[in-house]
Amino acid sequence: MGRVLSILFLLALGAGLGFIVGIGQAHFPIVQKVTHQIENVQTELSLLRTELAKKAGIVIPQAQTADITLNKAQSFIQQGQLANAALYFNNAWANQPTWQTLQRYQQSVLQYCRQLIEKADLNTALQLLNDMDNFLRSQTSHLTVAEIEQLQQMLDEVSQLKQSTETLLAEKQAKPQEVEKAQAQEAIATLSKRVEYFLTQASDISAGSELPFYYLTSAQSILQQLILQASEIDTVKTTVAKLSEDFEKTKQVVLYNQSKLEWEKISKGSDEITIAEVGKAEDILQQWLKRRQFLMERVSKLVSPEFSKMAQESMDKINSEITNWQTEQQRRYERWAIGQIESFYNSFKEHGKNTDPYSLGEIDTRYLSAATNAAYNEVFSTYYAKLESGQKITVSSQMFATKKQKLSRF
Image (cartoon, rainbow, N blue to C red; front, side, top):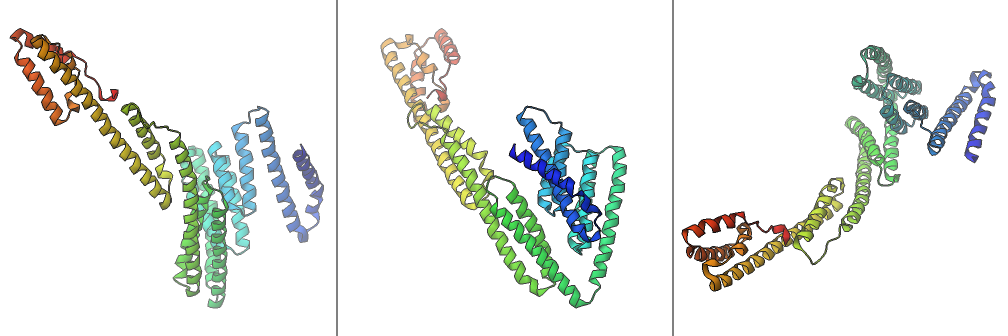
């Protein structure tokens, strides 16, 4: 309740400051700052209202949720926090991929680009415009035919601003070499700071989130631009070399932390698959197979070499256990089969051709070793030779019809 009152108070304060707009051009920065503050407060109030509605069990329309999220994205754009703006826009676009959502975000980016142009940050503005142009062209699958025609007007607007920016950039490049060099150094310094910012963000965010990879990708994109400039300006090579080293270090830290968290989950889940040391071979074998499947489904998430090696060692151990228990299961089946053969042979010595062949019929000879299979054939051949012609047909039918004992029983 205290948070709600505080937000309402700020809204009232913002409304009371409305007269500042008329003070004059000298106070425009103050007016702009207050306007942004009011917009932020309104967005926070909308998000809070959504949160309270969810707790109260009130269903918020998807369009309204997307609108709130888009307001947040626009607020971040005005503050220059493009990474955060992109996250909120992606969420709004996922909830409501409509022409209105696309148009609002495009206008916000264009407005921000104009601000960058006023600040002479032409390279950043041009990069954003190119990204916006590519993004708009990739969204035609979400639009109707009528909206695609409107999209062309939107692309023309982006193109016009790109052309004017490129013209300003060309004029800027045509200045004396000393001025151009100074401006290039300034641009490089700005880009370098952005790389450092993204690397810091990637390091500070705790594992388990996709954001560190987003920041690493952003840093790498800018670093590639700096590498191209380093080939033309010798003094940049040192800066690029250091940033490249920092990038690799940060990347390894992020990969390690992400893999460590995933490995902890894998280890915990694997330990929960209990495996007995003694018992039925089939039951124990199935648990080892289950543990191997569990590991195989998650090993791709281990992006750090250290944990990939640990996963491989664990997989080798599991495969070894599976092989051992498969061998043990085979041995148990064969010991049982030898018992059946001996039982039949003893009965045969006592009853001769009247011996019931059931104990031999249960044996599946596919699982017997060469030696045991030879003993089986020898005993059966001796017995079969004693039978009369009519009995042989009956015994053969009985042997074929007898249900074989499965390997999984052992």
